[in-house]
Length: 338
Image 1 (cartoon, one colour):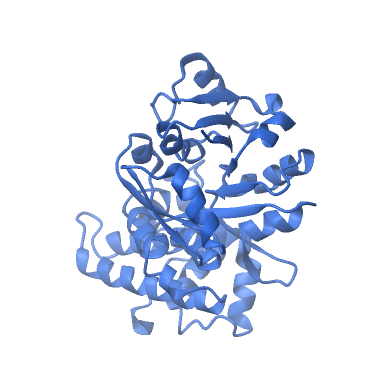
Image 2 (cartoon, one colour):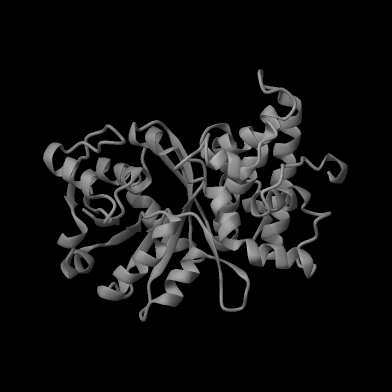
């Protein structure tokens, strides 16, 4: 029997606990300061109000109920916050001691490190705390609502030490949660974050030529070119390009561009609208992860195109997406460069 501490009670932070709890393991689910209503509902009914499922073998806690003993007894700790909650999570790790614990991160995102390079969130977390931890990343195609309903889900656990990835996968793996273990942590995490960006262009191609019916030919071409560009970006950052062509890249982009906010933003951009217009009307009060990543990193991204680290002729889709979002321009599909 394994004890799992999951911090973040949103849909993904909770859904990933379901395979483990189904396998008979014990879950302590702790909400952030934004999850108080969710935790209260679970404590009262055992049902997650957004996933609509009963949580087995799960003890739900408010963040103010979190104790050092929760860390001490945990065999695995899940980082279940979204990218905007990473700093908050680091503060939690500063407050408590989780030395040498094994972590599983479902958070998707990138950041700019001290060398002004684009880097992955596991590195940010590890460099920000005063003790050692081990982080395995979860990547690949997964819709939280489907996982919560125990529909078959095929994803990856990624750790530079693949033995650790194998050890953790044994806790979660079952008939509906099929896990591939990989060692390309950097490539997998770049895929997890950037697939949200490229999903915007795939969504754009779905409405750019006809906003009333779906046209498949341009979408299939754009999808293929997005994967090629993702591979080039991974290679520039010393990751394995095979991640782009596997579950972390191709598989996740397929799911993300089909439904969700990133694809929706792309569809509106394909209709000739600009980003600010869409976010003030069609997608008002919603967070679009791919666009937010561009905004968060826009200074460095534009600098890297200017200094030649990124070549706009080699990754023209990525270039056009950055232009459209960071400069609030109409999105152009760069067929002349593809």
